[in-house]
Amino acid sequence: MAVCFVFVAMGINMLLHGEHSFIVWTGIIFFGGGGLFLLFLILRERISHKAYYIITDESVLMDSGMKKWEVRFADVEEFYLINVTSSKQIGIKYKKEVEFQKMSDASSAGRTIRKLNESIAGVQESLPADGLNIKPQELCDLLNMRLTK
Image (cartoon, rainbow, N blue to C red):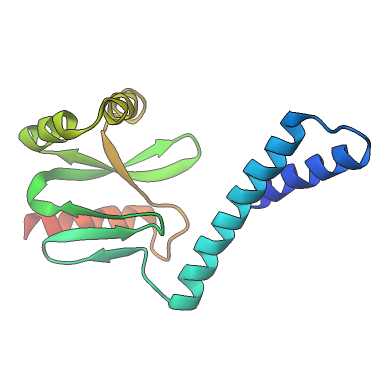
Protein backbone atom coordinates (compact mmCIF):
# COMPACT_ATOMS: atom_id res chain seq x y z
CA MET A 1 0.00 0.00 0.00
CA ALA A 2 2.83 2.37 0.86
CA VAL A 3 4.50 1.72 -2.51
CA CYS A 4 1.25 2.63 -4.28
CA PHE A 5 1.00 5.90 -2.39
CA VAL A 6 4.66 6.72 -3.10
CA PHE A 7 3.94 6.39 -6.84
CA VAL A 8 0.88 8.61 -6.45
CA ALA A 9 2.97 11.23 -4.63
CA MET A 10 5.57 11.09 -7.39
CA GLY A 11 2.83 11.56 -10.00
CA ILE A 12 1.37 14.53 -8.14
CA ASN A 13 4.85 16.03 -7.86
CA MET A 14 5.27 15.63 -11.63
CA LEU A 15 1.89 17.35 -12.18
CA LEU A 16 2.95 20.26 -9.98
CA HIS A 17 6.11 20.67 -12.06
CA GLY A 18 4.21 20.90 -15.34
CA GLU A 19 4.30 17.29 -16.58
CA HIS A 20 0.72 16.56 -17.70
CA SER A 21 1.15 13.40 -19.75
CA PHE A 22 -1.22 10.47 -20.14
CA ILE A 23 1.28 8.18 -18.35
CA VAL A 24 1.37 10.41 -15.25
CA TRP A 25 -2.43 10.49 -14.99
CA THR A 26 -2.67 6.74 -15.63
CA GLY A 27 -0.08 6.07 -12.93
CA ILE A 28 -1.92 8.24 -10.41
CA ILE A 29 -5.25 6.56 -11.13
CA PHE A 30 -3.82 3.01 -11.22
CA PHE A 31 -1.63 3.23 -8.11
CA GLY A 32 -4.12 5.43 -6.25
CA GLY A 33 -6.91 2.95 -6.89
CA GLY A 34 -4.67 0.03 -5.94
CA GLY A 35 -3.58 1.70 -2.72
CA LEU A 36 -7.16 2.52 -1.76
CA PHE A 37 -8.23 -1.05 -2.52
CA LEU A 38 -5.45 -2.45 -0.31
CA LEU A 39 -6.45 0.00 2.43
CA PHE A 40 -10.04 -1.21 2.09
CA LEU A 41 -8.94 -4.85 2.44
CA ILE A 42 -6.88 -4.10 5.55
CA LEU A 43 -9.65 -2.06 7.22
CA ARG A 44 -12.29 -4.66 6.28
CA GLU A 45 -10.27 -7.40 7.95
CA ARG A 46 -9.46 -5.32 11.05
CA ILE A 47 -12.98 -3.94 11.58
CA SER A 48 -14.95 -7.10 10.84
CA HIS A 49 -12.41 -9.42 12.51
CA LYS A 50 -13.05 -11.81 9.65
CA ALA A 51 -10.45 -14.54 9.32
CA TYR A 52 -8.42 -14.74 6.11
CA TYR A 53 -8.28 -18.56 6.36
CA ILE A 54 -10.84 -20.86 7.93
CA ILE A 55 -9.58 -24.42 8.36
CA THR A 56 -12.23 -27.13 8.79
CA ASP A 57 -11.96 -30.91 8.83
CA GLU A 58 -12.73 -31.07 5.09
CA SER A 59 -11.14 -27.96 3.61
CA VAL A 60 -9.37 -24.67 3.98
CA LEU A 61 -11.42 -21.61 2.98
CA MET A 62 -9.73 -18.39 1.92
CA ASP A 63 -11.56 -15.06 1.82
CA SER A 64 -9.23 -12.53 0.24
CA GLY A 65 -11.86 -9.81 -0.05
CA MET A 66 -11.98 -10.21 -3.81
CA LYS A 67 -13.16 -13.80 -3.92
CA LYS A 68 -13.74 -16.80 -1.71
CA TRP A 69 -11.79 -19.93 -2.51
CA GLU A 70 -11.97 -23.46 -1.11
CA VAL A 71 -9.28 -26.13 -1.20
CA ARG A 72 -10.72 -29.54 -0.34
CA PHE A 73 -8.32 -31.82 1.54
CA ALA A 74 -9.67 -34.83 -0.39
CA ASP A 75 -8.21 -33.28 -3.58
CA VAL A 76 -4.71 -32.63 -2.19
CA GLU A 77 -1.65 -34.88 -1.95
CA GLU A 78 0.45 -32.49 0.13
CA PHE A 79 1.13 -28.89 1.10
CA TYR A 80 4.66 -27.52 1.14
CA LEU A 81 6.38 -24.19 1.67
CA ILE A 82 7.66 -22.32 -1.38
CA ASN A 83 9.33 -18.95 -1.91
CA VAL A 84 8.04 -16.85 -4.79
CA THR A 85 10.26 -13.78 -5.09
CA SER A 86 10.19 -12.39 -1.52
CA SER A 87 6.86 -13.98 -0.63
CA LYS A 88 6.36 -17.21 1.32
CA GLN A 89 3.52 -19.31 0.03
CA ILE A 90 2.10 -22.74 0.66
CA GLY A 91 2.20 -24.79 -2.52
CA ILE A 92 -0.73 -27.09 -3.14
CA LYS A 93 0.16 -30.40 -4.78
CA TYR A 94 -3.15 -31.72 -6.03
CA LYS A 95 -3.81 -35.35 -6.89
CA LYS A 96 -3.08 -35.98 -10.59
CA GLU A 97 -6.71 -36.35 -11.66
CA VAL A 98 -7.72 -33.16 -9.83
CA GLU A 99 -4.76 -31.25 -11.27
CA PHE A 100 -5.71 -32.40 -14.78
CA GLN A 101 -9.38 -31.47 -14.20
CA LYS A 102 -8.48 -27.98 -12.94
CA MET A 103 -6.32 -27.42 -16.01
CA SER A 104 -9.02 -28.58 -18.43
CA ASP A 105 -11.78 -26.57 -16.66
CA ALA A 106 -9.75 -23.35 -16.78
CA SER A 107 -10.18 -20.76 -19.52
CA SER A 108 -7.34 -20.24 -21.98
CA ALA A 109 -6.03 -17.36 -19.85
CA GLY A 110 -6.42 -19.53 -16.73
CA ARG A 111 -4.45 -22.38 -18.35
CA THR A 112 -1.69 -19.94 -19.27
CA ILE A 113 -1.52 -18.67 -15.67
CA ARG A 114 -1.51 -22.23 -14.29
CA LYS A 115 1.35 -23.21 -16.64
CA LEU A 116 3.27 -20.08 -15.67
CA ASN A 117 2.73 -20.89 -11.97
CA GLU A 118 4.01 -24.43 -12.55
CA SER A 119 7.15 -23.14 -14.28
CA ILE A 120 7.89 -20.52 -11.60
CA ALA A 121 6.74 -22.18 -8.37
CA GLY A 122 6.26 -25.82 -9.35
CA VAL A 123 2.53 -25.79 -8.50
CA GLN A 124 -0.66 -24.63 -10.20
CA GLU A 125 -2.02 -22.98 -7.06
CA SER A 126 -0.69 -21.74 -3.75
CA LEU A 127 -1.91 -20.03 -0.61
CA PRO A 128 -0.27 -16.78 0.55
CA ALA A 129 1.47 -17.33 3.89
CA ASP A 130 2.98 -13.91 4.66
CA GLY A 131 1.49 -11.40 7.07
CA LEU A 132 -0.55 -13.91 9.07
CA ASN A 133 -0.73 -14.44 12.82
CA ILE A 134 0.73 -17.91 12.34
CA LYS A 135 4.19 -18.68 10.94
CA PRO A 136 4.17 -20.07 7.39
CA GLN A 137 5.78 -23.39 8.43
CA GLU A 138 3.27 -23.87 11.27
CA LEU A 139 0.36 -23.26 8.88
CA CYS A 140 1.83 -25.70 6.37
CA ASP A 141 2.28 -28.35 9.10
CA LEU A 142 -1.29 -27.80 10.30
CA LEU A 143 -2.68 -28.24 6.79
CA ASN A 144 -0.66 -31.42 6.27
CA MET A 145 -1.95 -32.78 9.60
CA ARG A 146 -5.49 -32.25 8.33
CA LEU A 147 -4.64 -34.29 5.23
CA THR A 148 -3.85 -37.35 7.32
CA LYS A 149 -7.19 -37.22 9.17
